[in-house]
Image (cartoon, rainbow, N blue to C red; front, side, top):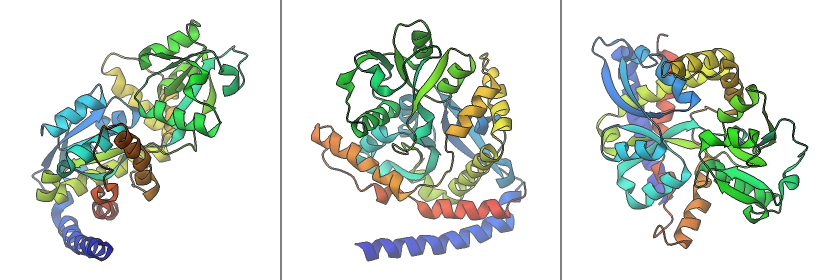
Length: 333
């Protein structure tokens, strides 16, 4: 089985080399742009991506549709309305178990536990997670943030039963902390940085190092099989955007704030800059990230939600990512 997989990877790399030669010869400068329908979310990395024409150097026209939730985006993905989407571990496990022929994992959209935090009022005398025992804690259950928090509690010898858990919407958590409706909250970026910037909330605990909790970039399997070069160009464009964010989080924060303002919402650019220092936008998929899906799948299998634990490594198209990295080196920016 391993030899077969290695052979398949070698064939993919060979074909990828031929494809890159064609792309380098004329792909990035073609007069007729290719078009790709992409689903994005209302999160800082995606705001930066839709704020600029990152596909232009590759002759790619990206038509991005922004969704208010990952669930809505994946419904559109499965319906064929977008060819690329992104999803967290829970939804990806379900998709892999129920519709394995529908997608490939081509990269990551964002990752890193530092984008998750436990927060309290800025004037609170609570100094540790242990100080929150027995108190009200606002959370958004069912999210990757909450899942990471539960892993953190296990590492600390604690559990959710140590708190009075209050399930709320992310938009309501900051006000609930400020108004003392809850004693603390588990939040994610950029909501944490925005709350800090407003001066009423402080980070008590960062969940950095607990896990990577990646949101994976998913591509339609049928579209990718028919148009691998288009997916490579898209990946190259996302790598360029990620490098921009990593190199200049302040400028990325301004760009994201300007994009969000187009929807009538004012967000401090400084808060988004802070958020970008806590979010990893490296697009590469690592073995460690893939391995994080296994315990999630095992828990879902034990609960009867899926029949078997999928082979998640079989979904990863590392060859496409490698080709995209090479393409960024040859494109004219």
